[in-house]
Amino acid sequence: MTGAERMAPTRLNLLRAARRLERMSKGIAVLRRKREALVSELFKVARSAADARADIGARAREAYDALLDALTVHGRSGLRPLGWPTRDVPLEISGRSVWGVPVGTLEGHPPLSRTLGARATAPGSAGPAAVHAAARFEALADLLVEAAPREMLIQRLGDALARTSRQVNTLERRLVPGLGAQMAGVGRALEEREREEHLRLKHLQGRRAGR
Image 1: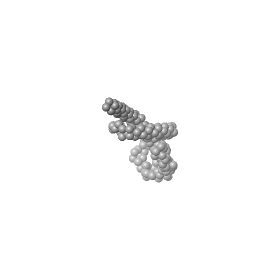
Image 2: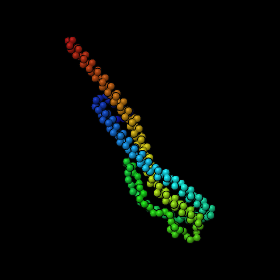
Image 3: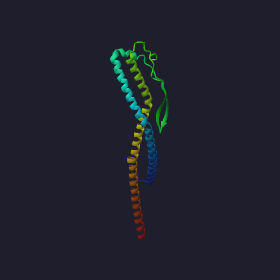
Image 4: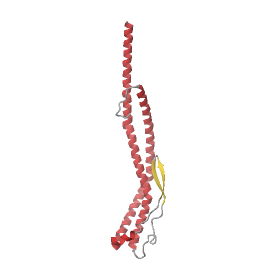
């Protein structure tokens, strides 16, 4: 029964509404505990996430400064061949759940920083500027891979927190007050009906007594 539906003034409907109101109250209590748990989880990862973002920003500036130096020395056409071949980076990820929110945890990954031989770079084809730029970007990629699960956790916890808050607000500000108002209306209607029945019965008793 939604807030827009009209409740028929019967004692059965009043009893059903009272039970529904009780379930809503229990649901609100559970959602509040969930919201508190989500906030606690967010606070746990917020500090480390903020530090990681600052570190990533600093490493990104270093990497792009090194890239500009390499472009100055080699030019775009000279650097493009040094980016090949590409490679796959296998990641070990495990899953867990935080109050029903699925999140992933990075268990391990191979180091992204490589030597010239590991990059399959021909000897003499890359100068110090290109090597430095490659090393800076590999270090940056390492930080990004490490930070990705934490950022995903923050996003999912934030979405779940916003959704839970909306549910609590909907229950507390719309459904519970609406149901309470309907129950009050049904209660008044039943009381009025009882008074009318009482007066009618009293009137009938008076007529019988007069006869």
